[in-house]
Image 1 (cartoon, rainbow, N blue to C red):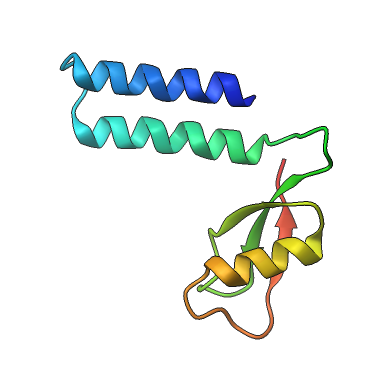
Image 2 (image 1 turned 30 degrees about the vertical axis):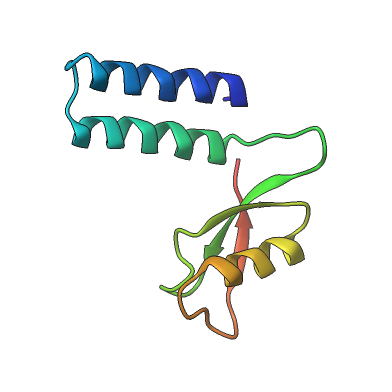
Length: 93
């Protein structure tokens, strides 16, 4: 899913919420699903990719965009709560 499609899907979710067609929980779920799809299908012509932390509870589920595994590892560590000394990153998509 490209950036424009992602933004449109989020707009549709917000519109449904504003019009009373969805409650907050359903809206959050829809927006989260849209963002997760965008992240896991992330394909950028600049060489960036989506990476997820693996191997320790503190980094599991932390997804970042980076130009390399090493850069992704640094970003995951920055965003994780109490990151361990050793963990892996996996490229998504």
